Image (cartoon, rainbow, N blue to C red; front, side, top):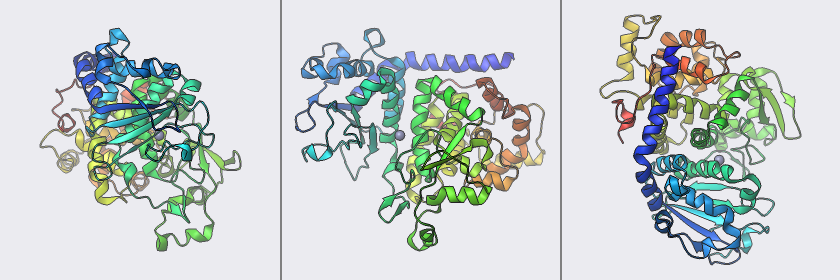
Length: 480
Ligand SMILES: [Zn+2]
């Protein structure tokens, strides 16, 4: 029990140290890399700008600060740019700066007065298109811009004061972090084989997604997952809520509406992704259509599904990423993995995103000179099954948490490989399955597990009994 307290304590110390140390650097990163554009009237090309340096200095002035409609936005802008004693939110600044450093490019944040519903066609063509939703209000949205698409900006975000007014200041901060990760994510500018007859099916037929949904495209589940991680770190209760849902074996939605079956036969000819028909795939594998929720969705208890379908859920991926990184060095190993994933996904856009992410995540936690294959040989040679682990095997944590967050549903090594579409490094699979799986499963049961302590037990079964302060681990994620 002492060791459990110790690891929690060390994680917290690492976190506080980071925040104090980097506050000024964080604000400088934000001042240089975010620019706000406020449109009080979306039908007019005039906008109000924000001088970041002035806000930081406490001398903010101009129409943005006196406009009657910007009251909900002013505290938010101050939270991002001011020192903590003057209204700044150090934690928000800390995570914002971490995300901005993924690409080190400027992000345009468009803020819209959408209290009166408007249409995209009413916005002048010279102005960025904010894409209002079906009710004429701006649903938060962000996207990455490649250098070729836009040399001066790395991405953009749209937020409207209509939804900010409904959900409040805390929601705004969490949503900002979520959207900022989308703006930093190079995968959202890649091609997708989910278009059938001109209609997109990456989130399913309805084009929208839920925290508790298995969506057809694993890449879109990945994109939402990495966006959730930033918000989970900023507000831990968000993580706890989804963790509870998973542990009580809550319902997972699957959309039934898909193109007709005869098109599925043509998928190879036209290059459609087979997961467009995800509900049919699940029904064929389980013999169950699930429980009908409404005209669009059926639900399954999440842990009753084969693991290879559970990983189509964004929240499950996000929890695996959060727990892995948190037990090693707060958010840093995760940020390194996202950055490295960005550089590797373009080379082969058809790669399974979970396989690539877990592989990169593991590699980031190796010390220089270490290789997965050499570690496997060493563990195999001594038939490693020691009762207490002799050294921190940090690189195995992404697989251990992938096993946990798929409910230990893989009963064979082949089923475990299927979580990663059979694309995972086989040495990594072998190391986890042959040397760590049993100890993880024997020490943390799925259905009775309810606390972060259980998550720490998983780390300890892989030898990770303390986390690292920045700059002290000697592992690859500390570099660039
Ligand atoms: Zn999102």
